[in-house]
Amino acid sequence: MHKQNRLAKREDFSKVYRWGKSTANHQFVLYRKEKNASQPLRVGVSVSKKVGNAVVRNRIRRVVKEIIRLNIDRIEGNADLIFIARKPAADMSYHEMEKSLFHVLKKAGLFKKK
Image (tube, rainbow, N blue to C red; front, side):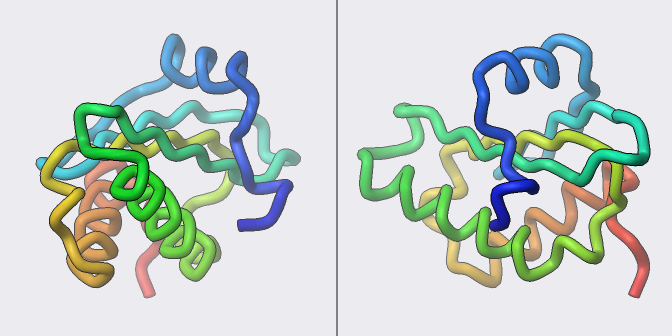
């Protein structure tokens, strides 16, 4: 994921958690906070220690970021997004995770039609 599309600072995460809206399915929770149109889409990923050990958490984080990187042009633009992985995400393959992420994005109304 490009640097301009990363949500990295703690204060940015806090703003999205505090003033954003959430949408969820069984594997992921999506927090989103709209912002003005001139700023690019930024994405952050959070995986709790409850999900698994460091290897599992980092794999989930890497896979989610890669799915977003490959499909960033299909996501509606001006927002900050945070994906929080739930425990069932630890046992998912790449394609299952991709399908689940697309589902939660469609639920939130952020996924563009093809």
